[in-house]
Length: 270
Image 1 (cartoon, helix red, strand yellow):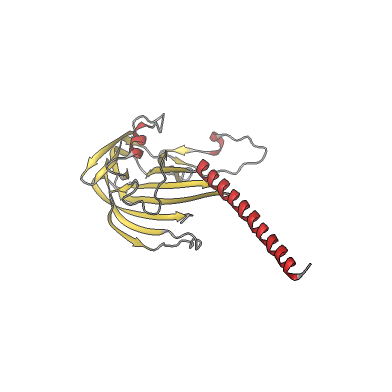
Image 2 (cartoon, helix red, strand yellow; image 1 turned 45 degrees about the vertical axis):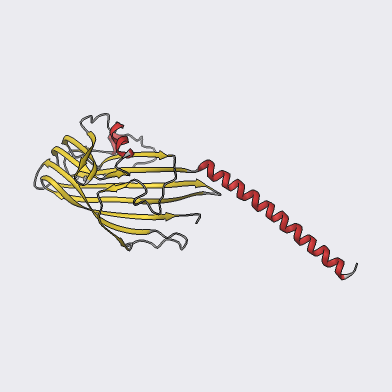
């Protein structure tokens, strides 16, 4: 066989390999796309955390809630959920304020719960809550840990969430004032293929309650919007929106709160 014939055979082999490779990659891509479509989910998670070190009487709070186009599907979910079967005195409602739609929480009496630190147990010891945890309504050396009050709802939505540009496009916490881009503080830098944006802003809450001058109250509100799917492993993209405030003594009005956002956190196709 002459050199030209060998060259044609070589070219034919290379072409066949490329065709097979192209077919295999196409199959993998289609299977991956199908798998992504089958597993793709979008959801919001909203959580309120309240910590009060002493009893609050006749407490009412107006808190930032996720709102989009003057509606709050998360707020509606909060009102319909039974969080504490043993605490029916918690009331939830959506209210219109001069700062937009907010979530109202009220309770005639919020009593703190402290518990003990975990106790080591042996392998042979039978475990029971009474043996490992002590509870009290006041701080003591035996019960030094203040248990937070938490309210959490998760909602799955049909459409993909715009986690890169949620402002103006998705449900976010309101009110937001003086929104500005900032830099992350004390965070490990993300990989190069993940490029989130960081924001800070001012927000507000309304707090009304009677209590001791020595009372400290901390409230944290966190919203996350997430898309996740499976393509050879679980992947996701997300945004996070948080508001935090700390108060001392009796309150009767609007309080400034600190807000922050992280957008575009995760893996994107483009």
